[in-house]
Image (cartoon, rainbow, N blue to C red; front, side, top):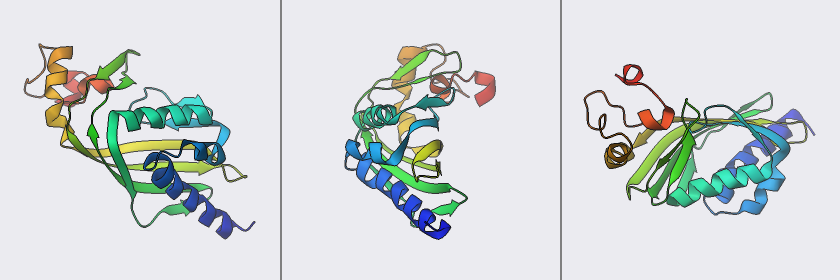
Length: 183
């Protein structure tokens, strides 16, 4: 298979991941897309996660549970080179389920449902193995609108002393940041 064919195939796999697996909850496609062992880096994880396709399914299911009617729209142009595909995306959904992640202290933080309509912008870089399977993925959240103001009540329950104070970043608890890091 030529490099050009691989690149086109890899781009199509990335589009299918967002459109079919996340947007249409077609979990069975994950087995075809991901290598038997892969590494994932994402904003809610303190350290990269090594896992298998079932782990991808579990993570995506949790996101879909937390954000009902989730839709991730991939920007028209994907960037692909040397086994990598980078996608810029916009995700929308209503925060109706708990979502959790590990903070820098290794503790699990749970954010209760806010009912807020969320719009997030991010980028994900996918690396493909020689057999066109995703073996590494790294996601970055660039911006998340609307949700921050609805997190105030959750933060107040988690840490009543700091919620609402000037300089209190709404994501501080999720990422385990100190006030100095977010001021």
